[in-house]
Every structure is written in structure tokens, then in C-alpha cells.
Length: 114
Image 1 (tube, rainbow, N blue to C red):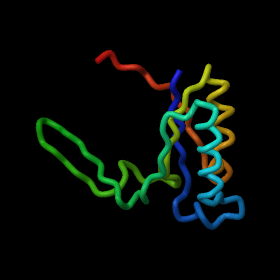
Image 2: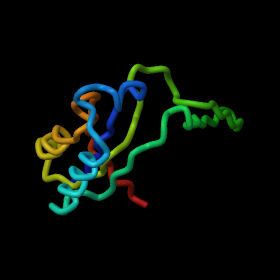
Image 3: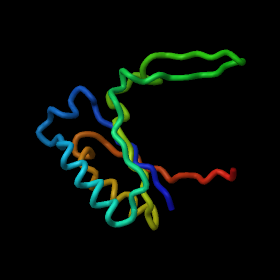
Image 4: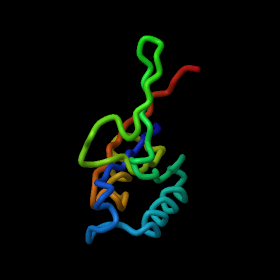
């Protein structure tokens, strides 16, 4: 089953806390999971200030700079993994280096019939 691990952290603190992971540690984690055959995709995101929120209401397009809502933590990246079950997905997410300074939301991917 596929799971999306969404990594959230306070961007302003992400690289300055004592437990903040370096990019090399994050790459090593991704390489390890990829070598096991369970990594489907992984990417870090640009800062939330570069985001645009798009809405379509009553046929009218609305574009807002930045994220949908003000929060203390922002989506900073993701890992799309293959795992036997939720327990294995959680175990993989627990090893994501950024989990030490933020959190990781683990969500099953729903297959669309297209």
C-alpha cells in the first residue's frame, strides 16, 4: 500500500535547532529507504512564501499568495512510500530526520479509478 508522509516544521527554525537535520542526513535516509525498494518519490519544498493557494468558486478563480492558513508549522516536504501496512509506514516515518524538529503526517494514498 502507498503512504504519503507529509513533513511539517516551523520554517523559521527548521535549520537552526540543535536537533535540526542536515541535508546530507535527509539524503542518506532517502537513499536507505530507496535501496529497500519502498521509496516511490521524495522532495523538499521551497519556502511557504513561494506558495500560491488556488480556489475556484462559482466559476471564478481566486489566487492567494502563500499557504491556505496561518500555522506554526508549514509543509516542508514529502516522502511517498510503499509499506505493508500503517505500522510499517509509521516506523519509516519515525526515522525521517525532520521528525525530530517537526512532525510527519502519515496518510494512506487512495487509488483513483481513472
